[in-house]
Image (tube, rainbow, N blue to C red; front, side, top):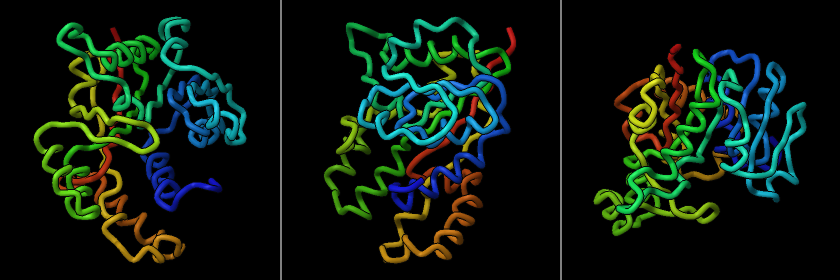
Length: 238
């Protein structure tokens, strides 16, 4: 994972450990530069989809199929094609619906991902958590007006990816009732609260922080204020 930030290094380790043992065919939708696709390709047949040509040009080494494109590629794939679907920090960048279109673009993507998943298959979602973002704005960044806007239900933005359209953990299952939420993890609960930046690159400190993050990731009281949530769904047999 060369070239990644200290947090990205820890996050990948946490997320990969949280995934159940996967096998068969896996779709990584919004694969970025492909670290997760490469990791999963050690035990699975992985298809990765990413719209950013720059990210794909620097793809991680691994035995996986990389496709350049977006949602349009999903519609070309047959029903029940995959045993697992990975979708990490993607859905919040899909635009919300409008008064003229009650079926949001995000809901349409969720339906496509569920359609592609085999009964009994797993869907792994990593998403922003609004409460954690409020903590970040108010405490770490001292952006009190932005924190207040988030509390009022407004969206925020990412310098790299644009508007972050926040959504609740329950939205996935409300769109596709066949998807059952079986596990929730909190991510990035303490890491940024340590403001001594030099510690972030210290390997011993990172290992201790990794152990602490892993311990609180399953505790609901800490999940409430973690910056991200990792949700794992299982598609019902029907």
